[in-house]
Length: 264
Image 1: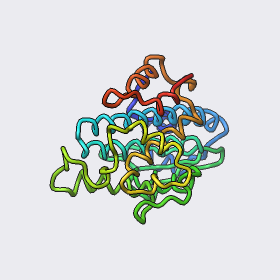
Image 2: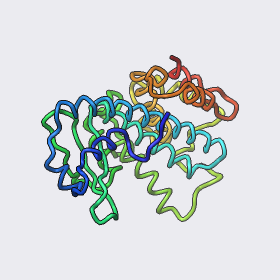
Image 3: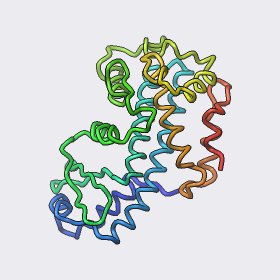
Image 4: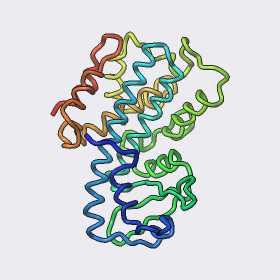
């Protein structure tokens, strides 16, 4: 597996900019060709699997943090798990979000593009990548999230708020105690709880602020990798999938509710 700080689709779009041209000005007036579309669809597919990989790794890291009584870090990992799956889902639309370096050499301009011949990249009117992903994904929620509200808020926005509150506004982490949003998550019953989340057709757990922090990222991860299996994607090396399977453990408990989605 090769690694880059820029997505494959982003690299392709940046590669279209002629040498010596100002990236923002060029891309704002560039029309996607049929050849561009064919290449970008494949690139976005690869990006989607890589984002999904990150989403699963972040979810498992969140559970590992809870096992270590590191609730502050777990909240951040759970939010990022949902964020990565949202980006993965957008790539399958296919829609990509990418960043173009400013001519001054300092900072970037955020673009988005619906991949289709005749379309033009556009500068996003939402400067935050996190808020842009939330806004675009909200229009394409899977069925189990279509009318979901958590404590009066949109579910992804609610997760974002928990992360920002505990990372930036709280005077200290609750560690080693769990905050109220995790007080119903019993680590001794982790597999039983994940099974309950998996079977939650009515959304009783997903909408519950004392379960949603784990339940929503879990359902998003399993929803995506069920319809787009990582092991059969052709994007990863066998050792990548082996790493994920070995990571599906918390406190000595094998998480079959997740590992079963990693079979070929």
